[in-house]
Image (tube, rainbow, N blue to C red; front, side, top):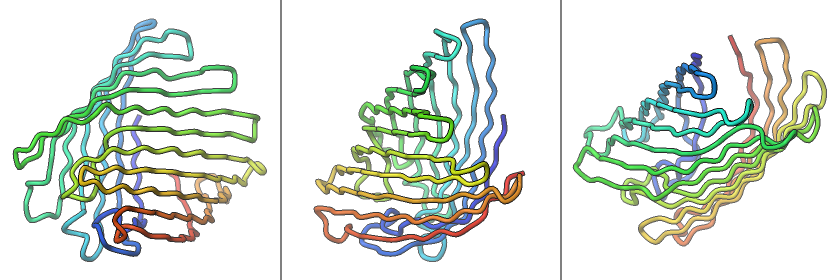
Length: 266
């Protein structure tokens, strides 16, 4: 399977560099390639993913990046719709416009987990992983154990609930902080209003506990409508709210973002 997507979007500048405010635009490209083969209940898959972002203005040099990762997975189908797997990721994260390569790093991740149907209406993914980082400047960082769980509850043909939970290591935009421990929970609700109109709502909570002692708590929610204008054209209207409190007052913010756009698939 091959997929490729180009986007023009905005990020919070405070997520890129500390003590900044506002939104910053970027161009992005995501490419993924995967292949899978099964031998009765046993199987394996190979994958590759590339994520690239080029930011505007003063963030172009400091934050533009490219992330390339190869993925190898072995699995056992314990039932026709449930599998247990072990997955290994090997990647490189590079700041493509930076004047030095010292903050670039190679990383590896080892995951063990299971995914598939839990009940007639509930589907899920749960995995535990360990991460390791080798920076070009010679520094090595062994990440803590990371736990992720994603549950999907199909209440009816028109209503779906999604719950995503995670605890673990995250590499942030704050170069001086290095690694941080992050706790996150996100609840999504999807309602098919009619054959062409879709409603999406979400609640989000994130806690970031940095090596420096700083603690951030972020709450947010979003409301979105999607209308299928044509088979390949989707119109979007949305609203997003975020509120971050922090032990470092310079990192606190509130923002409201309105979205009106179109998505073209081909």
